[in-house]
Image (tube, rainbow, N blue to C red; front, side, top):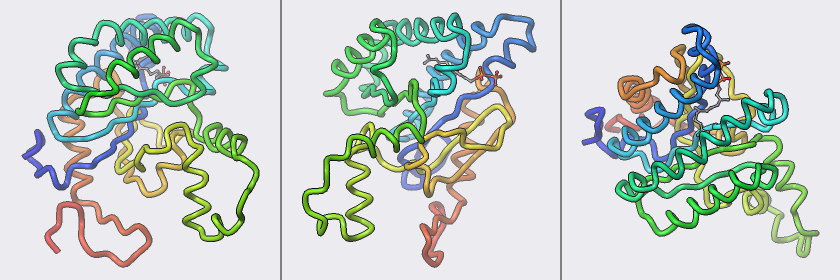
Length: 250
Ligand code: FPP
């Protein structure tokens, strides 16, 4: 049974997180926004353990959008980059114990050298692990990802290869940031906004959506369990006629 008391068969394989509300969490306490990000990083650390305990195979977390990267004050971006590098180094032993496979997606080539190198190192060092996949979206935008895929398409060699919808979609997927990445089953957004904000546009096509008004630093196992229980009741049709809810018995 999973941590939420759910059988593993109804636990989503891939869960996305839009971790919104760090700034407001800090402002409510008259603290600098950066303190909200530090607490947000702690909540992320705990969430990975909880997700792992519940049998979730992959989590993808929106750490920084391309829009955040371009529009937030340079000092806040620098803080986030340092925080990311710090956690990746500090958590190395724990990642090993949990057999975490770390990955990152986004326009990583635009990140500061030191951040990019730490990301590359963590990716290489954890590549042989066989536990939960922790993927961070950093300087990531869903439209940018699709535009980048379009940009890197080789000229068409054989039109017959793409003559079906499936073939054409496969050709796009081959050029996304991580071609083997599965679609999202469940997307959880904290912070109270009811929108996707340019996150994993391609992979969200049939994701179940779960929005909660709490601020990300306050996110804990109870919130994850509510989302998983709700997910288990959803009927996923993928455009067809309903057969069963993930937790149903028909
Ligand atoms: C959105 O909250 C959150 C971010 C832009 C950063 C997300 C980062 C973390 C959860 C910390 C983990 C960090 C790393 C680098 C792994 P916001 O600041 O937009 O909050 P607001 O909507 O209340 O202003």
